[in-house]
Length: 215
Image 1 (cartoon, rainbow, N blue to C red):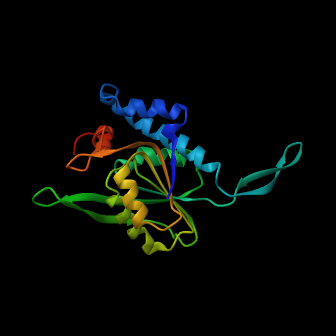
Image 2 (spheres, rainbow, N blue to C red):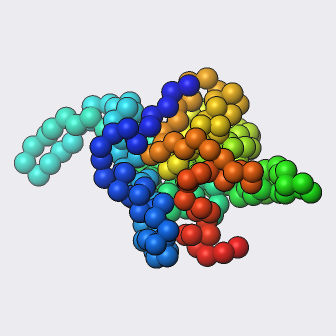
Image 3 (cartoon, rainbow, N blue to C red):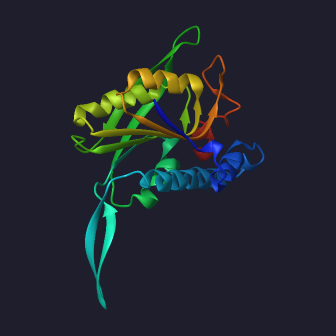
C-alpha cells in the first residue's frame, strides 16, 4: 500500500485541516467549503510533482522555449455531495481534466448496519486513464470501494489515486484490500478510531452537513 500522509509534513495544509476540525470555525459554512477546496488545491499540487511530463515547445512573442507539461490529463471523480468542494480544489489545478460524479449513500438497516448504495454515475471513458477519486472522509472505505466498482464499468484505468482530507486506519486497510495493487492513497491526516456509527474520531463530523446544511 502506498500512502502519502501529509500530516507528517509542515505545510499550510495543516492549518486548513485544523480549521476544518475546529467546531467554532465550522459554523461558517462558506469557510468550511473553502477550506475543503484549499485542501484539494494543495494535494493536487503535491500529486502533480509525481505525474509524468512531456517536453513541449512553446512560442512566446519573442521566441521559443521547451517546457515540461503533463503527459496526461486525469479523470477527477467525486462522491456527491460532500466531495464537491474538495473536487473543485483539484479542478482548479487540473483545469483540463475530465470529470466523474457518483451519487452514493449509506443505506441503514435495523441494528445500525449499513451498505453503500450507488444511485447514479456520470463518467467518461476510463480505459488507460489516470483516475483520481476525491472524497473528504475515508471512514470505513466502503464508499470508495462501491464507487470504484461502479466507475470500472467505464473502463480500466492505468493508475488509481484515492485522495481524502481525513482517513481512518481501518478505512485505509479496507481499501488496500479491495482496490488494485499499486493504488496510491493521499491524505492530509490519519485518525485511528471509528465510532459505532462509522464516523472518524476525532475527525470533523459530517462533511456534507457542515458544507451544505443538515440533510
